[in-house]
Length: 103
Image (cartoon, rainbow, N blue to C red; front, side):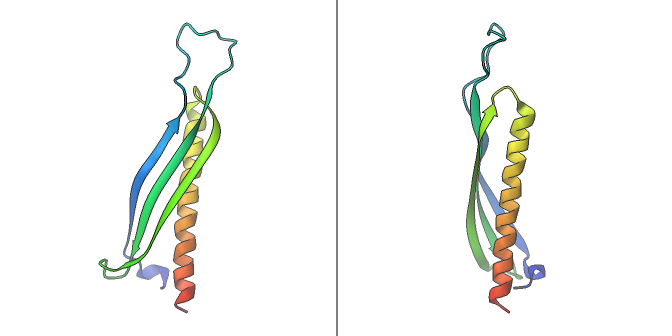
């Protein structure tokens, strides 16, 4: 299936979040180590054919990154961004395998 013949990719985001203990409160000891958590993403996806009504394939991508310091929101965004890259790569790989199967 040439990639240009895909009309729709439906994503169902099941998880896109951080998981961990709450950040320390305002009275916390500044010298205490910061707790860590993790980010996680789970997305179910469906690739439709040219008419938009035929399911070509389905998949599910899960990605998790550990060691997120719960006070570092820039690091959380970076972890979630990495998860989106994994999702895009999974979909690209599946599209490529569909195209190769039909050659």
